[in-house]
Image (tube, rainbow, N blue to C red):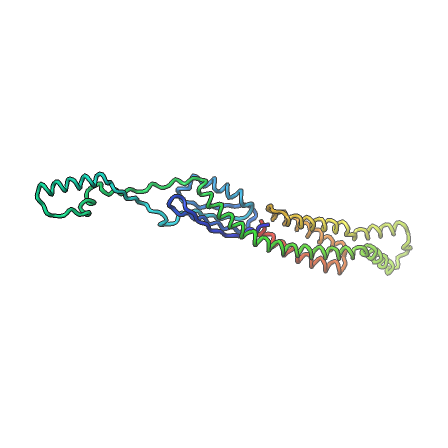
Length: 290
């Protein structure tokens, strides 16, 4: 399981230039990628964005690819040795013909045109596979960080699921007495009213039983347990599970709300309050799960 929050910076040489890739991710409902590149990489930008999308499932991604200033030499100097030798021969001949005593220095030779040739280096045309190597390294570092934080989130979520499961079991233990207790409560209220008919009339008892059955929360307990099991199974997956977890937690919240409304019992209501507290904290955590 991965968190959606992470940062990575990796550098590598392509030709004689140093290239740096930075990737920062934060939580977001969907996948939203922003990529900034120099003009030389403009033809590759769309392909690189698609590549990032194959490695990151959800979250806002801010990625920057840039060339470090001063990483390479923009000029190349070469020596035209054959031309320098020709200059030297001609100067020597001129020196002899004019009976000159002055020595011929290196400075004289290199001062002549085209002996030293200064050329501007042509920019290296970056190939997609070359830059992808550095991007891949940055993604590996990013995912390592996201997995570490994801593991911490996972442990917290598992503890809360265990706690909610215990509370649901407590509610289940109480639920067996709730229907009969509710039935007795209705009968007692009618007795207190001193109505002009006996409480053992079949039609009256049938209505009482039907009302009491409405307080039965067995189905809600079964569904809540099923959703908790789904949460545990999702935590064991390596896929992007954040949205599925969020939906499942909403379903658990719906079931426990129904339990509280139907049961009208102090112990059940107290357990529901504790469950809802854990669910709220879990939903906050899940917002950062990929």
